[in-house]
Structures are given as C-alpha cells and as structure tokens.
Image (cartoon, rainbow, N blue to C red; front, side, top):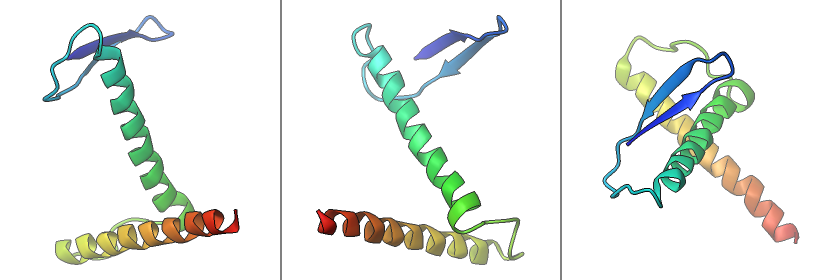
Length: 93
C-alpha cells in the first residue's frame, strides 16, 4: 500500500506500508491512521526515555550485549514506572 502526500513546499512524499491485511478503498485511510498512531506512540516513548526520564546518551559500553542488556533494563524500568504512576492515579479515584 502506498500513500502520496503533498507538502507545503509542493514537495511530494511517498510512504510505503507493509501489511498482511487486505487493503481496499474502505479501510486504507484507517490503516494509515492506525500505523501513524502506533509510530507516534513508539517515537514519543523513546524520546521520553532518551531526553526526559533517563537521559540516555551515547554508547555506554563497547560490548554489544552489555548495551543491549542495559537498554532492556531501561525499558523494563520505564514500564514499571509507568504502571506505578498510572496505577496510583487509578487508586486515587
């Protein structure tokens, strides 16, 4: 599935999407919006981890597995912190 979008500067951008869902005229726009929403959530989450919560900077190790494990622990920590923060909001209601 492809989408072509005209930008303000008369620049045309083409986006390509890969899906195993049958795409038709009725569901194409909905699929595009769902994909963009997911991308936005993932991008905001990483930006939040990198710049606001954990200040993730450049490589902190020369060992690939150590870097991977460190980031995995950061991801787990972020999930737990979000559950704690949002769970406490639910309990206050």
